[in-house]
Image 1 (tube, rainbow, N blue to C red):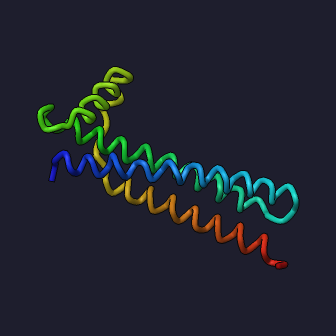
Image 2 (image 1 turned 60 degrees about the vertical axis):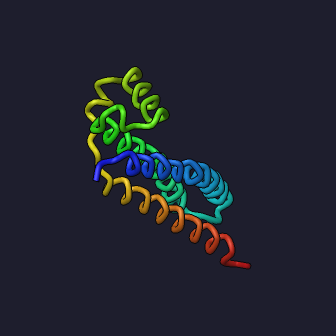
Length: 133
């Protein structure tokens, strides 16, 4: 069903990517530190990098889904903030904005992948650093 409530959901879900991104940066810094001390191996750094990257993708995919759906609705069906965001994106890069397509399944998969990558990284950081505790 195509309505502004669906768009609002994606606009809210995109903000999950922000704390995930900063968590990823902390994981990445800690993994690099652990690598430099010899406590961790390269694969943990790569997982932390992947967690950080998929966090950015979470924000982007939910934003693009919302923008794609906004274009399908009549301007009167959008809230003022939705119209403002759509107009800003159209001014910034009209061709790219008009070529967006809605892929809600992909957004959910990317979000779950980001959370899984973070979980894997955090568990590995904790267990490998506390192996001798």
